[in-house]
Length: 294
Image 1 (cartoon, rainbow, N blue to C red):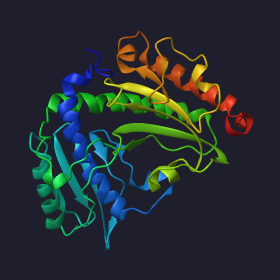
Image 2: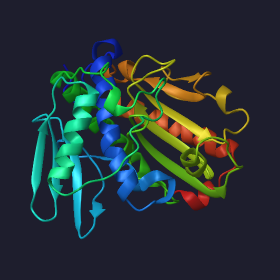
Image 3: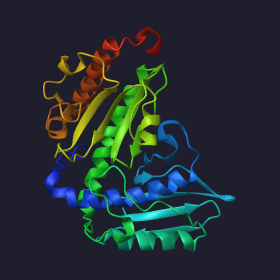
Image 4: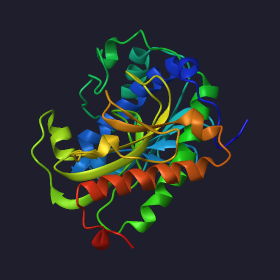
């Protein structure tokens, strides 16, 4: 097995994925409640660490803290600026039980935070405190997924280097459970319908790339690329590599993860995907590439 790009079949890990998605949303909602409202939800997005996923540094009265999901020791760890450290094991348990223990853990170190208990960006959401359907956690699959995210982060982060316009870090967005890095043209976009966070996220022209473990109409992990607003002619544009294609229902270019990990040059395939989709979208949307690129 390629340790950097391990197999991650959707059907094999989807139950762990669904449960972990809910757990990370709880931590993310704490960030929404406490973090400054930075543009495009950057203030509440999570980041990769050498051990897992972590929230931004979060203020709480005169202290600050972080919440980290550790996929080596399989713990959730809360670290506080006064030296307090609290841990909770990650293992099979219903989302409702995890939610109860999570609230108690925060209260136990004086970090009481009121969050909205309804999940977002999932079909048929169930309140965290009522969700007993999602209860799987397989440490092997959680660890594999984290290793894939780490490898994807490395390549996606590298691709930012030639772009000198406004660009996001490579964030983990817990709402969709994906990694994303976004470039901006600097121009406002036409108003967009939808929830407030989506309207704000797409207030300006963007070209985004990322990695997503799958769901809905795409039941496999994949790298993705899209432009918003999408310029006319983009979906029919030739892109690289040959395994990539335009997914009509998602409205995005897709590069299946399985094609990447089984290739002779996974990093090169991802770079070709990012560079070709960016170039086609930027040209069709008439971005000022001379000003935005090295």
